[in-house]
Length: 341
Image 1 (cartoon, rainbow, N blue to C red):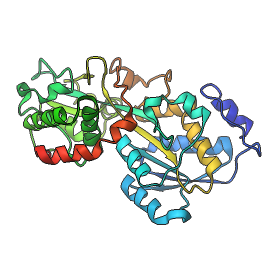
Image 2: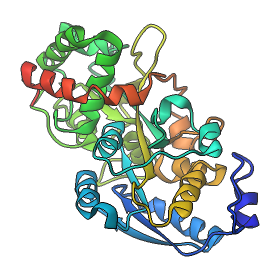
Image 3: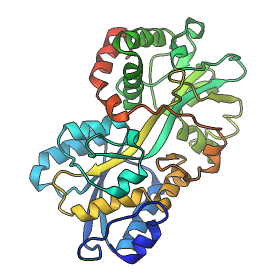
Image 4: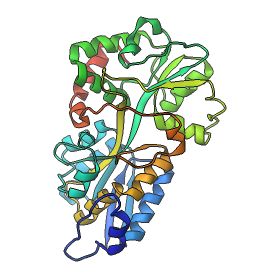
């Protein structure tokens, strides 16, 4: 690896020097991240290394299916996607490979990476409670509270087919077991103000319109809208919306979603792929995740963006997200049983 890259990344992790002393050639990136701010991640890596990044973008499931169909001839070097569920889906599909990297092991907390080192989380989003301050004086303090009958007809949420819903229920299963999670999911459904629909921004819009009084959303949707209006939803519209970082258990905090990636099983440019993952764990890249898309950096000690810091201190659930992802099939069975559409 060239000295420029080593110097740029040394503040966070110590990266290996490859036998030829530098990187060159290409990196074929399959990505379902759809954020314009990621352009800086790619251009800076190219500038630091001389490696040309070729991008193929699409929905996560489509990219995973494509990698499966391409098999040993797949040109993919890296898969980037969002949510632990999709990362685990890629692992189960056999399109990722294990990576031994002291740099990644040192930088990425153990609960934010696959047990077999096939994927690593590089940014986090807390899935928290938002509420209408004018109508709700006692917002849910825990995730279990979302099933409390006092909130009947008040809550907006996404559908059961959404990975954020699946991962949240999977985390409840991991902490409390299938039976308790089923009871919780039924109580949650009973409290819906409307049929599940839309994305996270739509849940916030439901609060603004008065269609619901409580909603669940990832933090970056709110922080981003406060920083810069998105389709007419900005700080002015969200002025009366409060938020709570709910506790998952007595000693475990807010549920976390990941954005992460792994090296493709048949990566033709494996050294470049490993270097790219290590770059994503660097101080420079972690700051882009924070400032560019209002996410929580995965590497501890990275400063937060002003919009995210304004939300207050995050106490997060430290559960092993690799273990959580194993519960998705059970979660889908529970969704069907309780009528969560």
